[in-house]
Image (tube, rainbow, N blue to C red; front, side, top):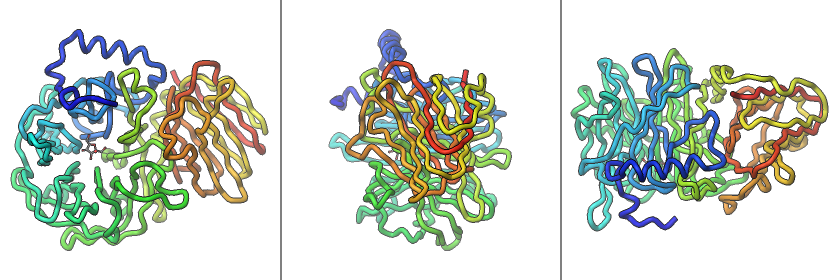
Amino acid sequence: MNWTKAERYRSLRDVNALEMEVLRAKTAASPWRFGYHIQPPTGLLNDPNGFAYYDGEYHLFYQWFPLGPVHGLKHWYHVSSKNLVHWTDRGVALVPETKEDSHGAYSGSGFVVNDTLHVMYTGNHRTDDWTRHASQIIGVLRDGMIERRNVAIPDIPAGYTEHFRDPKVWEEDGSYYAIVGAQRTDETGCVVLYRSTDLNDWTFLGEVKTELEQFGYMWECPDVFELNGRHVLIFSPQGIEPEGHRYHNIYQSGYVTGTLDLETLVFTHESFEELDFGFDFYAPQSTEHDGRRILVGWMGLPEIEYPTDRYGWAHALTLPRELSLEDGVLKQRPISEMKQLRSNQFVNESGTRLDVISPEHFELELSTAGEDFKLELVKTEDESLVIRYEKDTNELTIDRTNAGEPFATEFGTTRTKVIEVTSLHLYVDSSSVECFVNDGDAVATLRVFPSDGEKRVRYVGDEASLVGWKYE
Ligand code: FRU
């Protein structure tokens, strides 16, 4: 989209109520608005930010450009929830208005200190000649707004470029650590670590030494945590070429599991795995509460035009997923709280063919005996999203070739994962599908933009059990 710099770098402060009303009306008139996902009121949503449990609620923010479906001046928008299902809209929480974040309050994380929700985020500044400067800023949530406290990390250490952002902070053994996504001056991606005892002085500890020395040109949005006695490092590398069925999106998002030694910074780990084999997933962030590790991702990708752009808005967040590490395998399961949305059960049969009119928003569980099947979702007269499984090759394919308004077709219209499938658990919203395979073994997230008309779910295959729930 052709937006001038002046249009892209306007702040919410410069927008009057009438202009905002017009944008809201345009967005509200859009088809494909979500029923139960977090979506922007107007404009563009990208990364989840500041995810933390604080004062009896989960707080979640997201990158937000209010004025249109483009990557412009990034603000933070705030929602909160007691149950991760019903979210309260808390409005804009961070308007970039200092020199350091003059060109965007970029991604960052949340953490609680002395009963106060703190965040650390990247201030993105551009000089007149458009040179980028990145610094890491700490703020606190007060009366619904993030108040800036201090520039915690003003400079970039030698050896790294200005692509230095997205700090994730955690506390361990009386110290605070921040892991930051970075690009080395030789244009390869990595992550680096800082430590502080008082949140003011941050010591650069160095680069996390992984076995992925040459793995893309930039690693965005790192996250690191312990799960079942192991460390998990999540990040979103840019510049990875497709390889077989893997890495077909413009940018990737995945993890390694292993052990991170905070003294030597050596991370001994298994191979890099994608978090999601769908078309639209990026820059996830996690938080921990009550012994559960919950992950939310951006259901979208940069540099791609989506059909909702013409209505002035773009993207949503994924449903929260619960992570666990079982026998070395990272499992991702839909949070059990989602059951609260179930209303009418609309399929409860067993058979080899099923054909039902589907609601706009629903959940569906399919259990099979491991044989071939074909499941068509959001099917109107002549379009359908097809999920098919071939037992011989164990290929599970999601095919959106003819699933509605096409977009991002240059990245292919099918995604395949080799996996033995015995069950699928699907969450379908007006313009998205999240498909969990078996019991959390894999997930595929995708957007789909069906045309108007009666939608059906159709199953053809061997004996299977299908149960669905309409969502209110
Ligand atoms: C990832 C990202 C981050 C950055 C933010 C800006 O999507 O590029 O690296 O902080 O988006 O909106």
